[in-house]
Image (cartoon, rainbow, N blue to C red; front, side, top):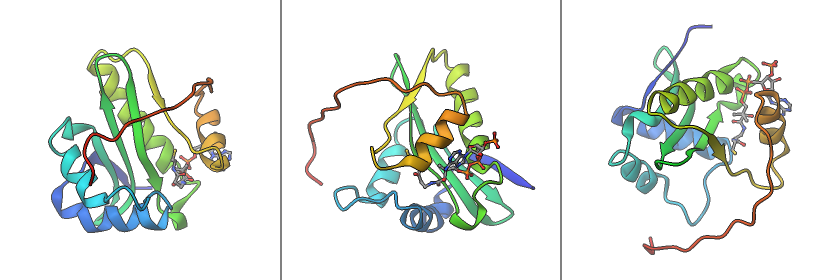
Length: 140
Ligand SMILES: CC(C)(COP(=O)(O)OP(=O)(O)OC[C@H]1O[C@@H](n2cnc3c(N)ncnc32)[C@H](O)[C@@H]1OP(=O)(O)O)[C@@H](O)C(=O)NCCC(=O)NCCS
């Protein structure tokens, strides 16, 4: 496997949006182009893609808020699952967070996403119970 994990480049935009769509990560209330634009203004070096040559085969969007590291938009291409792409992306995100002094990384998984749960279990992530709540500050 010749997968390279590197920071997102603007030229990756269409490939990444299409990856998110095929991986089922887009939601009607999240404009993926807007999400990319925002991420490029905050810790863009933590927005990573996995590239096989010129083909984008995975992505992860990480962030460190000074207390916890967070992972979003983890995906590997549907026809490239089980090759270690997801593991490689998470490892690189963890390395970059750790280098910033981040003590713990966590993420939210939708309850119906058993695949993501199995994946993160096998990477040693430990589930914990929270009541998630949120408030939109900008109506997109
Ligand atoms: C979750 C996802 C990124 C995993 O990517 P992947 O490239 O197939 O994962 P890897 O090949 O790196 O697998 C890493 C480990 O996870 C395990 N794993 C992967 N999918 C699994 C599953 N469904 N159940 C249990 N274990 C799983 C693998 O067996 C592997 O373990 P090993 O290295 O000990 O053999 C991929 O399934 C995906 O893109 N899903 C759709 C998007 C999504 O749900 N993202 C997460 C949002 S929270």
